Image: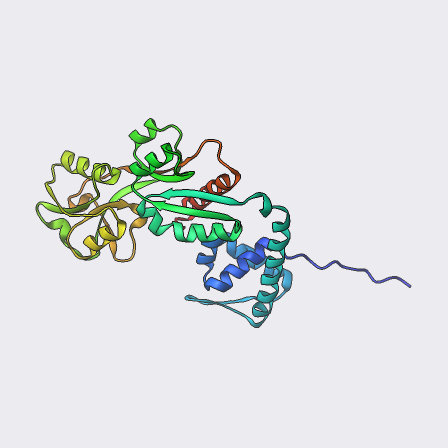
Length: 301
């Protein structure tokens, strides 16, 4: 009599389960892709492969939402326990070696838009590392780094400042554009009202130089060192402002040559890391590199 053939059950990869949980929690493939640093198409392929292994659909999809099937809801409990057990096991070996405090600096604009979600994900992967954040202008953050008051900082840089600071690692390069209110008319006024930062801001310098070379008269109608203040001026119809292209969205529109405005060129977001950085600082730096590599691929943080 022949013995029965034992067919081993397939293994569910933890990486796929992490993606599955992210989709279940956010209700969106796109948001989950952002959370796990993958493209939406890669996330879709992961779930398709998992559904093929299980032989059951785990999500109900329509044009506007994603929801769990009954089987997906059952799997969610298992997935969360498996991921928690993995974190517990790994932490017994890895986390004791990576602990401490990272003093992190960021300009206001990225501190407002990017850091909250980035640092939340970092705290989940490195719970023994505390991050102390300083939000300030790039010129002041450079001074803090020079005085050893920070371990790592983000900086907004022009081509000129990049040449002057060879130690800066470029994380992102994107255009500076004119931002106006959707349906607004501030850009039609003469002289054109602009909202600017203080002296030394590279976005301000690019705007002032471009307007001068273009021959368009302007007046400074609003000044703020904070992105929220710039948006308030734009949405109030008081002015237009130079902003990174990635900041355009919702009720803002990009203005250009057809609106009588000059091109502003690019800026760089750089990162400075203290020499002889500790393990926690290196971990934070790697996390920022991964974040902006994902943004470069997908346009989403």
